Length: 105
Image 1 (cartoon, rainbow, N blue to C red):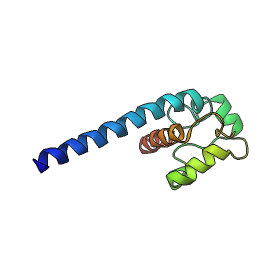
Image 2 (cartoon, one colour):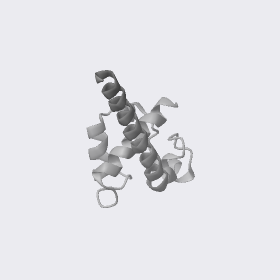
Image 3 (cartoon, rainbow, N blue to C red):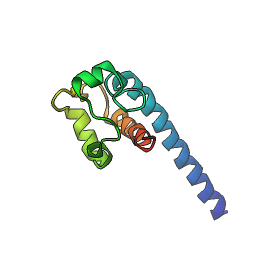
């Protein structure tokens, strides 16, 4: 019985993680893609003009999720603040998606 519960817990955790990544991708595409590009490689005219950071930039890769949340909420330099546009949950979902983009580079 415990084995079945353990497997069920793993499946639920995996499903919620996948949902967060899916929601993160949707939010990323709506809010971040214009500057950071579809793949996070800053391959857009706006991103190049603003010198946006790539998702493979060591400052992004090495930042903790908490540091990224604070950065995205507060903005910095040419990056606007998203505190009035996205909830903490939406930002966390975007961060989960950013971590996927990092692995693709």
